[in-house]
Length: 156
Image (tube, rainbow, N blue to C red; front, top):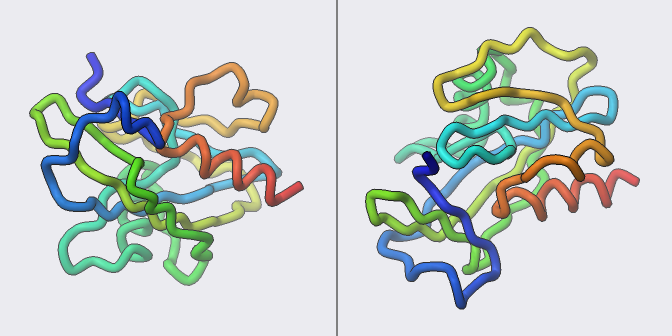
């Protein structure tokens, strides 16, 4: 059962926000040209590793924490490179409890030399590395799909 529905640039169908903007941190984590995505339990879609930035936490510290929590690996913050901020008003997350948030996402990048041994968290159903071609066969969460497209387009 999905506990969250995501919208991007869809003012006709997206619900009106009930909360302030929510700051998130996600990572383009790659190895040998493939991108790591997480099969999310909350929406049963594939998305970037990451999550919410806690009060008084810097986005870089949030991504270090999220990678540790979601993958079970420790990576120093100096290894991550800040890529972009995606914050247009139509990036929405609507939860089954009735809360609706505008999402602002700080995106980081990290290229790994070899695939790590991953320990799944309770938030994830699966984790896999995908080539651009393999992404055509899966559903990427709408609030991350443009980030993924931008990364593949810019690396070509």
